[in-house]
Each structure stands twice: as structure tokens, then as C-alpha cells.
Picture 1 (tube, rainbow, N blue to C red):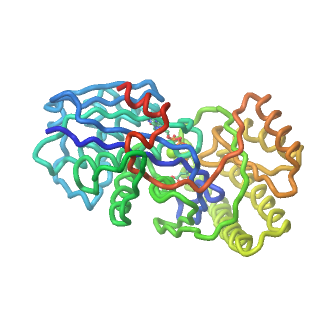
Picture 2 (cartoon, rainbow, N blue to C red; picture 1 turned 90 degrees about the vertical axis):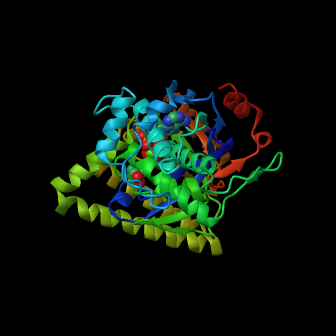
Picture 3 (cartoon, rainbow, N blue to C red; picture 1 turned 45 degrees about the horizontal axis):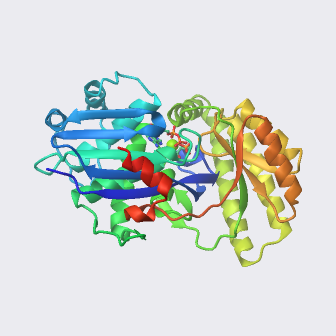
Length: 397
Ligand SMILES: Nc1ncnc2c1ncn2[C@@H]1O[C@H](COP(=O)(O)OP(=O)(O)O)[C@@H](O)[C@H]1O
Ligand SMILES: C[C@@](O)(CCOP(=O)(O)O)CC(=O)O
Ligand SMILES: [Mg+2]
């Protein structure tokens, strides 16, 4: 059996407030980014499954017949995306030669692919031969949700290829969205991919990757923030590598060790997200400079909380100091421990201040750029809707 061809993309995200706390049932506010992950599935060489992930320098190929032995027992059906079972994940690790306990970039990506591929096709009589290529504009492991964009793409492309969600041809030069029902299913399976990569994800990143735009996320409940003001944000990548899985586990340990100390911090972050949402709504009706002053204070308080939770890093402290020297307020975004931070630009920020801040942050060895937020969620592409660069990369596998 050959897989159907399918090209998809999904955006990264920025968490304005609520990272980590959202894993423990608190509110997070997140917005999609104009940086995307692109993934193409093609009918591959007969009897082979090949995956090409140039961002992480990983190129692997297996015999379909050998993958059959890995099909999970007790198949739950496509609508009930099942939690990755530890024994199943261990079996996949052994099969792919990844060894137990390996949490590196490549292992997690390979496991996420194998898990979603085998689960999505578990009920069909045959496993399809296919070639997958994935390319991302997002930095990997930097807090911008590359794992979720990857998981959303995997889920959408494999479900479409299986015929479980709509997969009709997209007109030349165009992209298409899926129905809400299809998006729900994409999101469910992407969440399972995130579970492999993050261990214990909240689901906010895959929700943004699936639906795009700005949203409020609380314990699995997604509320689109329909009327938000246009916010100008600087993104800074400290380029300090870190793993979301390790950082999320560290926060959980701290909460277990010091519940009476950490729970009030989580409550406070929840209140920050709620206050931020209230201000954003008021700004959508008529922005005033005082609103920006409140947003700046909320950023500062939250950054202190994130440090208390143990997910700060000297590189992020430096970002906050450099930007504050120019009157700008920053906090980490995503899992922290390095990776990216956001800086709020306000209407009274002079363009020369922005330019000087960007230059000073670059002088620290960081990447820094003004971003645009609110991109569409997962998209189905015609090949001609892709830029030449992306098409060239996907076509080379
Ligand atoms: N383009 C990609 N190709 C392959 N794997 C990817 C890609 N982008 C992300 N991943 C997977 O996601 C992981 C990074 O996820 P994570 O630590 O959550 O950081 P973030 O989501 O902030 O980028 C990588 O280790 C890798 O397994
Ligand atoms: C820390 C957390 O809140 C966000 C992680 O985002 P990222 O993987 O660092 O992009 C974890 C989660 O919500 O699953
Ligand atoms: Mg992630």
C-alpha cells in the first residue's frame, strides 16, 4: 500500500503568560508566530518507510514488514488518540536503536514519528510505504513550539494520508484549512506526539499550532481571543540549548518538594494571565498608554516567578537587563532555561531605541528580530503555494 501525497504546515507559538503553570491547570495566553514547520508525505519506494529531518540531521529508513511487529495491541480507534504507553515507547526505542532513557533531539523526533504513524495506521490492513520530509523555519528546542508544530504536521499529514480527514487536492498556488471536526482530530493526535517529546505537555502549544491566532488555554479548554490589539514584540533567541521535557520535569519536582511555596506562585501566574487577558480586551476597544504600562509590569512580575520556578538562565537575565537599560520589558517564553524571550514594544518606543536594543542583543551573541504574530493554524498546501526555498528542500528527499 502506498501513502497519499500530502503537504502541510503549522506555525510556532509565543506564550505571553502562563508557561509551566499551564501544565498544572492554570491559564496560559498564547499566540501563533509567522514561522512555520512544513512537512511532506509522498508514496515512497515500495516496502519502505523513510524519514528525512534535515533540521536535526536525521535520515532513517525501515522495511514496512519489520514495522508490522510494532503495531500496538488493543487498537483503540482513530477517534480515541491513545496515550503513549511506556512499554510501547520502550519497544519503539529498541526497534529504532535509541536505547532506554535517551532524551536527545533525534530520539524524541523519531519516536514521535513512529508512534503517530503506527497508531494512525493501526486499524488499516496494511502499513503504507512512504517518504516523509520535514523542514522548519523555527529554531529547534528554543521555546517557540517547534515540537508542537512538528507534531501537528505529523498528525495532519498522516491522518490525511490515511483518509481519516479530508485530503482533496488543493488548487494550484492555494492553501486549505480543515473543518473544525478534522482540526479536533489533528489536535488530539498532535497532543500524543507532544507527550512523547515533552513527557507531560499541557496541550497549549499543539492547540496554537492547530488553530493558530491568539488563544486562552485552561486545562484542555481552548478559547480563541477574537479581539486582540496588534502587539509589537521583539523575539530574542539566546541560542542556549535546553530541553522542554527536562525543564517541565524540574518544575514538577519543585512543586512536589515545596507545595506550600510553589502553589501560590502558580496561582499568581494564573492571575497574571487573567489580568493580561482583561487588559488585552480593554486595549482592543481603545488602547491607552496606561494599558502598556500594566502589560510591562505583568511581564516583569512573571519573569521573577519563572526564576523562582527554576526555569531562568543567566542568558535570559542578560536579555532582561539589556532591554531594560533601554526601557523595554522582557520575559522568557516557552520552557525557559535558555531559548527565547519576548520584549514588548510600546507605541512610545522610539524606533532608534528598538534598533539599538536589537544591536546590543545581537552583540551578546543572540538572534533578535521583530516578529509578527497571529498566523493561521495548520494548513494543507498545494506544492505551488510554498516558497521556492521550502519546496526545494522538501523536493530534495
Ligand atoms: N524540524 C524538526 N525536525 C525534527 N524534529 C523536530 C523538529 N522541530 C522540533 N522537533 C522535535 O521537537 C524537539 C524540541 O522540542 P522542545 O524541547 O519542546 O522545544 P521547542 O518546542 O521549544 O522547540 C526536538 O528535540 C525534536 O525532537
Ligand atoms: C513549558 C510549557 O508550558 C511550554 C513549553 O513550550 P516549548 O516546548 O518550550 O516551546 C510546557 C507545556 O505547556 O506543555
Ligand atoms: Mg516544545
